[in-house]
Length: 119
Image (cartoon, helix red, strand yellow):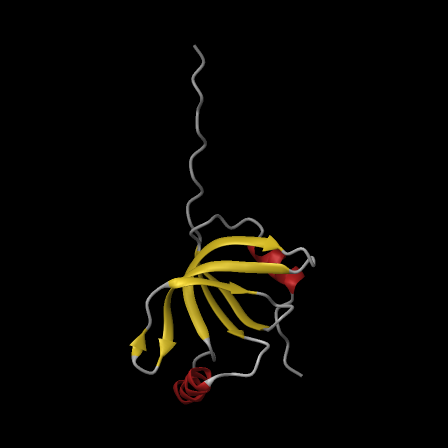
């Protein structure tokens, strides 16, 4: 049986990561795959890369009303048969799908603390 990343592992892995951290994610949605997903999975096996892979920047990690940890990121590129598709926000919920891979490619610099002046 394959091991997938759980919601609690997602929280642990990204707990100290600031917004803008560059991530690589492989995620399979819980619903039936469409034609594009099937093409991408078939090609990923031929090329030796993760199926349904996404590269982008971390927007936030949050918990739903159902207490499910969720990752939202700006996806800079997404694999498609015609090349790369334009960027968009994507949300990954391990409770609804399979989070196969989560890799931090580059941690963003945390913003400098703001100094308030007093009169």
